[in-house]
Length: 396
Image (cartoon, rainbow, N blue to C red; front, side, top):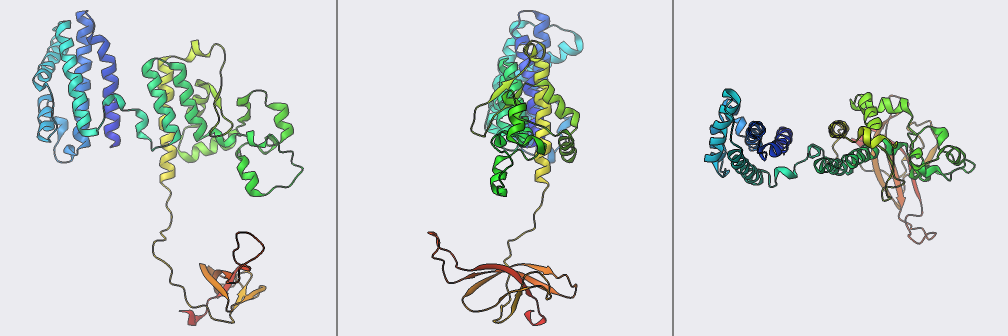
């Protein structure tokens, strides 16, 4: 789905949600106000669907009237149920908005039902789903954060505003704060040297180094959310690199409850001030946090998508490696000799490497012996090494 389509339909859905209680009112003025919002929502839906199917690339749909938009949808093979009622709705909206003719509530309810049916049918025809199933988080690529933000949007629609703020914070946690999680270091005392792989599994490498020790954690972590120890200079630089305003990221941290989970499969712990729900769990704050969180996660995903890697689809045709050629420890003929090319080995060339002497060029190679090891259950080559083989003119 095109980004423009999603933006337009999210706006249209918001207008629909606002118009429905007004259209259901028995008060003529409230019903008339709902009618105006309803027609605007309907028009936004039709524009979005025409853009999605590419009609805007062939025709200038911005200048078309409401009746012409309906005609374009039908011409594209998209059925528009109750189109006659919808055209009457458009005329009534014109009279109400521009000539102050108040609409009758019973008539407005009829128009509302027709508009809802038209939106449902046309959206399912073009998009394969209802407009009610569309979320602003659909702008994002599939990810764990996207799931939390869709849950936040659903919670807002249901009026569960504190839940919405919690779900929004979970998205920020998995995208940003989890890198500062020192939970994995709670048993590390620094006395024993451990390998890089073991340390990597502990996580939390963006947290300040002095926090990643058992003693510090025992003294300073009083509640679960204290396991998140943000180094704010690093945090600021990370945001700047992604093109995110630091203050907006910090706003989300201030305006949502703190959350924590020890591992990806663990449950969530939530912490907030006692007066937080009454003061901050409101519709305006929930919608602001959701909107900013979607934007921030989108910026991070766009940054990741901008990365390009060199192609490796064309295989390298290696030159013959001749018997008795010398393999050096470093790309220099003055370095230690580590191997002489001989039978009984399989050689693989990985890179072309310029030597420390600019006049010399080398192949970076590895070699495995055909002789198998009997020291492990899994077997494997008895001998393995890496080194540098000088590239000679006759190698081509």
